[in-house]
Length: 453
Image 1 (tube, rainbow, N blue to C red):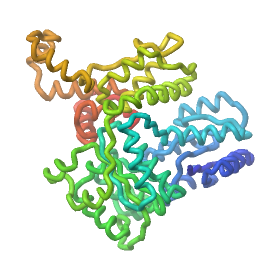
Image 2 (image 1 turned 180 degrees about the vertical axis):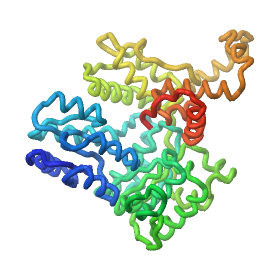
Image 3 (image 1 turned 135 degrees about the horizontal axis):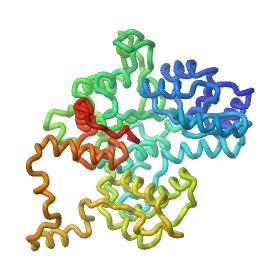
Image 4 (image 1 turned 90 degrees about the horizontal axis):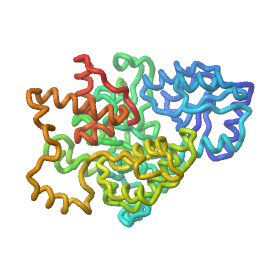
């Protein structure tokens, strides 16, 4: 855990830092938000920021977003100033912590951030085998390729491997290759010098340098442009990077973990991914089963998310009823763990019983669970009736482009702006989804605000 503290607050915030140090966190202190931004751009990474409410929180968070630096921000203030706390939350802070600091509260904050990103649940035999493999390969220096459908927990597995590795005391840096525009991804990876391109107002350290002596996760690497793949291959072979706008080589000591939800052999055959890079990355392959293939994990995962969102929304924690558990275990889960998380978030909010009842869990129509696919297919083959009469006829007269637009926008609305989840349901890449949404926005359509990735 890397904690960045910003501000003074009569020395109380420094006390919070000391408590965090005692709990095992690595702490960096900055006088103000400008110094903090400079430190972050120059490789002083952080997993959590605690900032004085007297600082310009909104401007700081806006700058983080503009620089594509994703860190949870917690505001700190003296006493329980309700107005200051509300203002900080409205400006983008994730939480408000009163000062002087309480050791248990600081520990709970650090634990919450760590638990949120690192929880590994593996009770199903299929998942236990995967964890056993991860335990074997984690202490090595081998590059690892994690594959699986979107939402199966590839980043969580990456963090698990890092924590079990010899590099566990070093940084764990994650970069979602699909979420960064192509023209900026090279800078994100390797950094840039001031003036290297329009908008490069200061030097920035890239993810490879930031991950030095630790682990770098290249999430959804199959979305990377083919030209940049050649530069990445060179870095993996030579262990040196060159910042954009510089000719100086910088040595890096990084273990790389890559992930993808694509069929990589098909991507290689189509010329979308370099075969030599794939072989370089795929020293060890860890394949994550879809949630429908690990039903034994569903109850534990569901309870974990129910407890998480009960606490987040200030409502009582509830157990999941047996009837609800049975429904969860037999559902198809096209969106995997991410879909389960959303379902339990809603369930804990709408449940009216002492236990989470089956009716509180909203499950979409989707592919039949594996156990019932054969019977469903047989039933469909023997039936000549249409289950949704008029459903197809209502589309007649509309263009394919119009129907596609409505489908994409409605799916995004259903996912509360979560583009990764929407892309998974639609069966398209997040880059394709982003391009479509930009097109619709230019045409004047209302697009849901981007939610969790």
